[in-house]
Length: 184
Image (cartoon, rainbow, N blue to C red; front, top):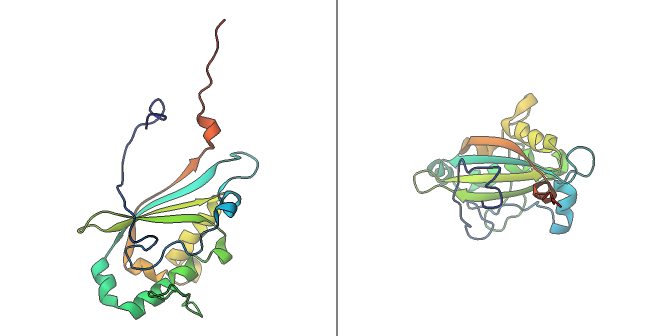
């Protein structure tokens, strides 16, 4: 906050926590297809042209109907996610409406993602953080989740809904360095 105080003010804050390592509030492991740290810069940073060194961020606040999710039962949950709950094994074949089928990074492109549990007992949710070098990759994932162009809707969205969402450009750290003029 101190580093940005001259150019930005806090408008909204979400408080999240780590839940059983990489397990999200659905009870499934999150981030299975994330790139390694060695691969992350190739996937997340604009390599050349305008914005070189920047990253594109999709930030969304999702709210869950955990009662309906629990009532659906494990078999329905596994088909909605596309993985087994107990050991995180990918279903083969993936159901067409499974979350991992709708957001398949081998189909739409690679991103670095993180889900952070937010809210409380009465308003459980997830803060989704997705980083990529190209906004189109993130946008294509959203279109596929919504079931655009005659494709199936992401079955996970039957139990969770986006309440906020925005794209941001994260410039490289060098862009924030203050240049001091020296007066002789």
